[in-house]
Every structure is written in C-alpha cells, then in structure tokens.
Amino acid sequence: MVWLALVGFLVIVELFITFVGAGLQNDPRAELFSPPAILIVGLAGLAGIWLSHRTGFPPAWDPSVPARWRFVYPSLIGIAIGLFLSVADNFLHWTATFSSPGGGPFNAPFPGSLVFYPGGAIIVEVFYRLLPIPLVIFVVSNLALGGRWQEQVFWVLAALTSLIEPASQDLPDLRAGTELAVGLNFVGDYALNFFQAVMFRRYGYLASIILRVATYLVWHVAYGNFLCRC
Image 1 (cartoon, helix red, strand yellow):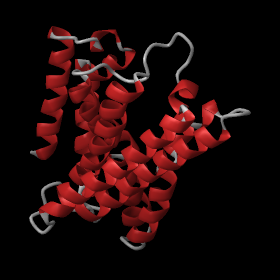
Image 2 (cartoon, one colour; image 1 turned 45 degrees about the vertical axis):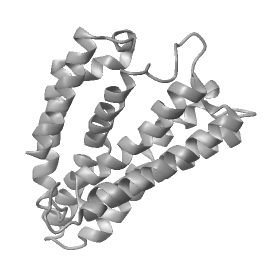
Image 3 (cartoon, helix red, strand yellow; image 1 turned 180 degrees about the horizontal axis):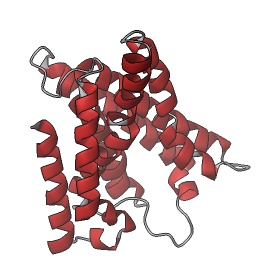
Image 4 (spheres, one colour; image 1 turned 30 degrees about the horizontal axis):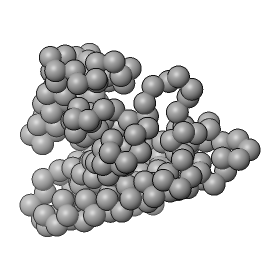
C-alpha cells in the first residue's frame, strides 16, 4: 500500500507537468514521469518489494520501526548531505562543471521542483536499491547459498551499488582543474547512496526515500532555486 501511494504521487507529478508545467514541461527529465515510465517503475518496485520481504528487509511501514528512524533521522542525515553538497558547490562551483554549455539550468525551476525532486527520489530508489539489492541477495544467498550470508552479501552490494550514481554522474566531469570539486561531489553522492542502503536494510525503503528527498530539498530546491541559480 505504501508503494502504491508513492506511485500515485508519480502520477500527480505527471499531471502537474501536463496541466501546470511551471517550466518542467521543457525539462527532458520530465519523460521519467510519462505513463509508460511510471508503469515500468511501479512494476519494478513491486518486484523489488516482493524480493525484499524474502531477503530480510523490513516492510516500509513496519510497526516495530520507531517513527524517528523512519522519518526524523533519515531527514537529518539527508539535510546534512544536502548542506555538504551546497557548501562545497558554493565555494567550488561544481554545478558549473557539471552543466554542459547551453544545456539549460542545472536544477528544475521552483515551484515545480517541490514535486519534481521527491518524484525523482522515488524513481531512482527503484533502480539503485529497491530492485537490484534484494534481487542479487535472493539469487546469491537464498538460492545459491541456502539462505546463508545474507548480511555479508548485503554489505558488499551496499558498497558497490552506492558507486552507481557518483561514478555515472560525477566521474565523467573529471579533468584537470576539477579534481577537488568532482571529488567532493563524489563523496557526497556516495555517502547519500550508502546511507540510503543502510536505511533500506534496517528500517525499510520508505526511510531510504525520505533521506534522498531531504537531500534534494536542500541541494536542488533551497540551494539550487534560491542561492545557486544554476
């Protein structure tokens, strides 16, 4: 039910882009919220949830998980990471390095960013963690090892999958003169993904999504829309 509510939010974002726009209709990333894309995300997420329940992950709304670990602590960690990225960019202007010349603004415009980035957090969760981590644990631990070594396999996957985003988004901009800016952003992105993996394992995928939403609200909305203007 939690996942269906999150998919419903993606539908709301798609309707916002279609009927309000607010600049989001010109963003090529808006295709992520098209009906076919939402259907794919929804089904992939359901598969990931089914697998997660068979590989030791708690449900999204597990009554044994205190609310502070589902909402408060993930939010605080996300805010801290967002502040780290924002302060680093303020001094090193990493977004200028990341953005291609003539490629448009780095951040989605406000107020559409208030729905765009939470929706994006739901989408990337599916392909960075919710599906791949339980799937590999299920194949390696449940099927190949008879249910053994789930925790060990998880920690290896947490370390490896946390590289996907920084390696694909940060390292392509590494060149002479950008080492510090790209390196700090790599650290911030890796920390974001690794802490999300831990939250997913300990407190359920909703806690992981909350962490990324908090990061995005600081990094892309507060800093990106009102301070950086990038």
